[in-house]
Image (tube, rainbow, N blue to C red; front, side, top):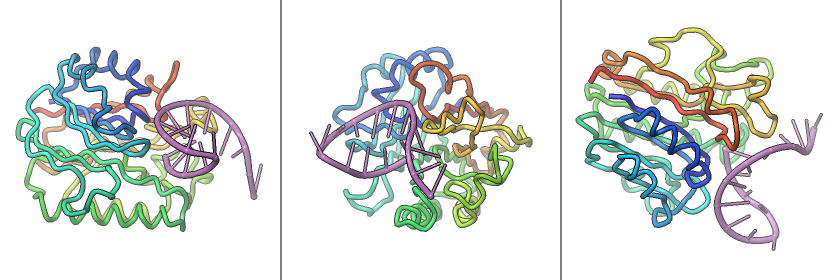
Length: 256
DNA sequence: ATGGTGGGTTCCCCA
């Protein structure tokens, strides 16, 4: 089973990139973030025509997550249970072929010390509680998405410039490690231990042209899933060319 | 120290 994750920065604006990529690579499961569209306006037909069942949890303008699967999508959970209608639409969990899929769009946090930063740290604490209350580390579980946090300086092209800043600050890394404490492992690091592997480059500073990137999109998987994980690839080429997202897709392969 | 680009909406917010 091959599982993909991609922050598309608007699913409607990215269809011309997303559809050919799906047709070429045909991942079994695709977790999308930042779909930026209300559920009734989601472009279902384009993705269904690629051979996918589609489950969405979106909102107008901001946030939004979706799961596409070539197999049946079961046990769908939209948002943190009990959080209410006003909560950001950033979490979509489900089961595909017996694998628990948790698709997340972690808040960006804007800047260290802001209200959005505190919201981000709290959101990560809620994510850990959600895992504790609804899942077990002995399950075959794959949590993936835009985590908006680097693990360490290997994930940062210019660690001096980024030290202590948003996406790299120690409280964020600690909050992410607390999520990992549920019993998750950084699947990419099973296969690639070096630096220089990035998934996001800032549009505003034309970061991609200088490879000024960060690794903030992750596959965080339970021990049973890690054991069966045979590769994680970053599709860096998708950052080049016309109208890219600021994030590139990743595909993790599991011997399942 | 700031701004840059891009998406979606609305006369600006968010990343």
